[in-house]
Length: 264
Image 1: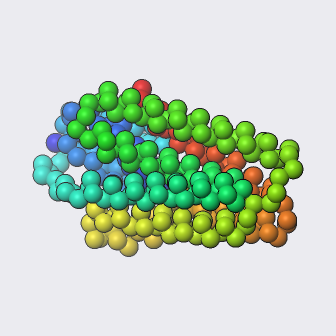
Image 2 (image 1 turned 60 degrees about the vertical axis):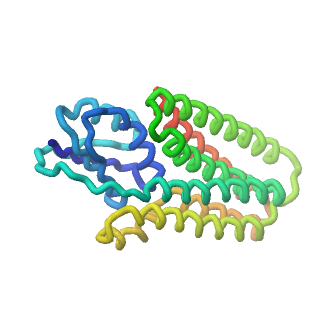
């Protein structure tokens, strides 16, 4: 058995972990994957050469780089029996907030909330692909990933068109208080998701949970929408909301292309 360690610089939340798991699924030589998200490290226990594994990691464009490979005597791994249950919990939270933010975003005329809801939907896709394709073939997973990726891109493009329409049109100001309140709850939800997923890790990593939360892209987005809400009220302008909406739509499309890579 060999142990290969990868540094993955863009792996800063459990969504990237699931993308990597799906990408490496089907490589028969892999015995176990051990993720250290706070330190952005992935340890792969495998037999044979690392070429196929390294190629798959690099193809995700997450800044993956092989650090070392060495032999190991470890042949038994503790699989978490609650992993599926935890994924269902995180999927439910993300999808619920997709509906909440999309609904409140439309009602309050906030593109920031609408864009953030699509980011929540993107995470739901990642966890959903992992769950619904469990035990399925690699081809099945690729088909689901392709549908999810194109659907996500379509929604983001529609969002961009709406941003442009509002930018050049004469729209009412978004409701800044709704933006702030809903984003605060979304911020809490993202923290809960990270905590739930980290329950599957060893207790020794518990002290790293806080650093994970603050380095998560989702948390940064939530803070961005909150800031935009404050600026909308302060400047009496919808521009901050449109700007943060545009930024998040770009991130959503980037996430969609990552998902599409899984379908190749």
